[in-house]
Length: 290
Image 1 (cartoon, rainbow, N blue to C red):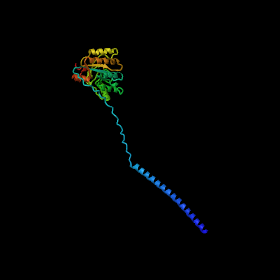
Image 2 (cartoon, rainbow, N blue to C red):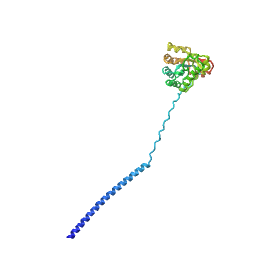
Image 3 (cartoon, helix red, strand yellow):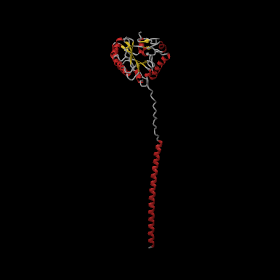
Image 4 (cartoon, one colour):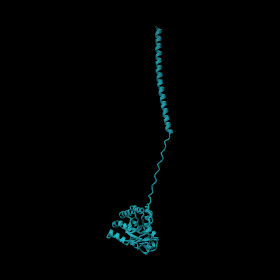
């Protein structure tokens, strides 16, 4: 009996020990699998990191800082070649600008008619505000000339005062639009021996229609010019502020000149086509022919 009990107890102990070992083995197996899984994940992560490190990102080209664009000088409109051989010539000129009122209106008409003119500017009216007007004059193929700084009668000026009036104006014109005036029109067409001696530019006059007077109508201005103009004439007009009658006269005046066989040119072109050197002493030009 005692042997049976002992054998039974021994078998129970063996079973319990086996079950404990089985459970322990299961736990060890689970832990081992977890460790292997973690190790695999860590390896994959390291591979990903390595790939990230070894794959360089293409650097974007640096965007260059744009250089400032210089202000372009006005480009004259390309004037088509004209055969002047069978044409009479006339040069329209305008005094007392530039301004933002009358000068642009005159330029509008010149552009519409596809003709040019010469503008004699007063230095004290040349500003940053009127610079675009001057640029447009050149773009249309027109000419810019000198009409003194203050527009005072200069016949009593000293040589130094004369030089100052002309130099200040010419230098400012060159500074603003890059051209140097080739001609001078004396204010009020008032001259003196001292002026001729001290001013190194040809003096320009012109036939006129008294368009400085508000009492002369647009129709009278047209009639006076078309009646008196001759081949080679320089026509003296004004573009000062408020001179609306000249604006109103200009369209018909240009049409009448063209219908009468005239080609409208700048003062420079007029002397060139007539083959006359304007640089002559003590000469006040109204027409290169005489």
